[in-house]
Image (cartoon, rainbow over all chains, first blue to last red):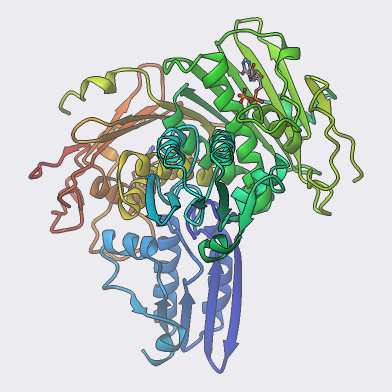
Length: 117
Length: 117
Length: 176
Length: 176
Ligand SMILES: Nc1ncnc2c1ncn2[C@@H]1O[C@H](COP(=O)(O)OP(=O)(O)O)[C@@H](O)[C@H]1O
Ligand SMILES: Nc1ncnc2c1ncn2[C@@H]1O[C@H](COP(=O)(O)OP(=O)(O)O)[C@@H](O)[C@H]1O
């Protein structure tokens, strides 16, 4: 589904032995990125060894979303953890490519794959 | 897929022993309904015993589209034929319901079903 | 028409100016659909709101401007997040002025092409009011409120209150 | 900037006035996405155009109006069906006036949050020009042409011509 199909934004958080999986659902734009930021800060404060961000339900992201993911990656790394993005939809992959960040982030196909990386 | 996913409009026509199947693809609004009308006029002029209109690839229809279908139904009936709509998407079904036309048209689930009705 | 909630007297949240061209309708629908969903209307409801606005725009193009493509249309949108969340959409033009009483749908029982647009607009919207603008042209004000209990589904037993009364200003009463 | 095709001097096909509010961005994106696809851009291309416009609007909200929610923004859209089909989008505001030379992205090599919006706009659009409006506020003009042979994909070997030059008016040359 694409722009206009749903206008809600929610974030699902799961934790299991040092691994945190965050699943935002909805468009990550200027109006929704502050909500994601709160969840991500919460997440890397608990110093997970692996912080997986499942973007399978994110049809759109702008640079405010990317900024928050860069911040989360830096902070996770500082704590000795690893941040992994997975299941990027076409438009979301596109912004990472344009910003030359597709090689900076660890990007996995799906959550299972992200557990292995 | 919903509004905004594709902006093209095409019509596919198939004929087999007195049966004509018309498959419009795209939104049937004021800008596209004239194109559909041309195809439908062509179709009922050849006096098919059954004129099936497959709406499976039509995410949206306004009353200009409904008007053309009413016209086509009347003309098909006059020629002794039968007009059958099939595979209506939710939003398209909604306009037939609002206009109380869901009981006036013969509506089938899918093209196979429409062959039987 | 009852006075609109406070917010609705402010300048609109979105104001779109467009030409009377069918090719611009899909972009306009996309905007209306998205703001409706943003306000909390579900996909079916926002689809209906979008249809009503589309029908009103088609009428301005077809009847107001006689299919001329250089007519101007203004669409103002207020998306009020109050209780109930309320969407107000006003369409204005510089087209032919007609007596609002003449803007009415045909009887639904006669099955014939056309004559459904105005009926659809009244069925979907909670308030519909046509008026002549002092500056020339027409103004159509449409209001839709969001009732989460499903009372907002205009289809369920809605009377055909508009089909042959020609009433040009309707407010539906409903249980909240 | 080269003179725009004839049509583009006419009034815009669509002109949207909105407040500097993040909640209105999705409706604006829906409109831009739909008009782009109507002009023939494919889904990926229209997604990129929408992103560029969104980034420009975010910058007006964040930097121009310092996140105030009562600022006004105007978006004018010309959808020229000529050859090549050309989309021109102009954003205007009454926000802080800045030297266009100061609207520049950071170096991409420093990986840090923020500083990507202006780079993305230049990467996606064929022409990007910031200027101060005589009436106050800023004007950003963006042009994107549709090349059906795929030459319009700005990603393929596009030079990082903007990343540290701070150039405020770029026209990409490309093979047609
Ligand atoms: N914006 C308008 N300006 C002038 N007349 C209008 C307008 N909208 C509707 N009407 C009148 O109301 C009638 C009913 O409109 P409608 O129900 O949409 O059916 P149709 O457009 O198929 O005739 C129209 O035929 C027209 O006479
Ligand atoms: N509309 C604008 N008004 C004023 N300054 C702007 C505007 N757009 C961009 N800028 C300036 O350009 C810089 C780069 O913008 P951008 O690349 O979008 O990154 P960010 O917004 O994350 O800082 C901004 O920090 C700001 O100083």
